[in-house]
Image 1 (cartoon, one colour):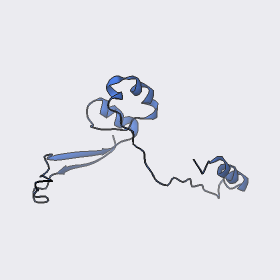
Image 2 (cartoon, rainbow, N blue to C red; image 1 turned 45 degrees about the vertical axis):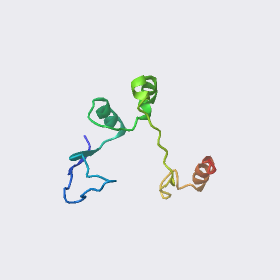
Image 3 (cartoon, rainbow, N blue to C red; image 1 turned 90 degrees about the vertical axis):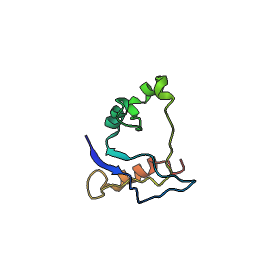
Image 4 (cartoon, rainbow, N blue to C red; image 1 turned 180 degrees about the horizontal axis):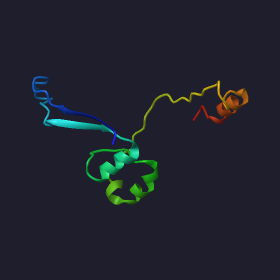
Length: 108
C-alpha cells in the first residue's frame, strides 16, 4: 500500500515549551507515501487527514458539497523542466527536439 514512515513519537526532552510555543499535544504521527488514487481512497475511508484529489476524481469531488467545503488550492512555485534521452528515437532527431521546444510556451 505504499511506504510507511513512523510512528514518529513526541520526544519529551526535545522541546520544553514556552508561553508562546507550548509542548506538542500530539503523541504520535504516522506517515505513508501513497499514489494519489490510493491516498484519496484512504482519505474517503477516514484513514487520512489530508490528501490530494486525483484529477480523475475532481469533477465528483467538486459536485459533492461535503468535499467541496474541504478543498484548498495550493500552488507550487518552482522550476519545471523536461529531460529527453537524445541518443534514442524519436528524440535523437534534432527536428523532433526543435518541435518539442517550439511546442512549449516559455512565457506562460
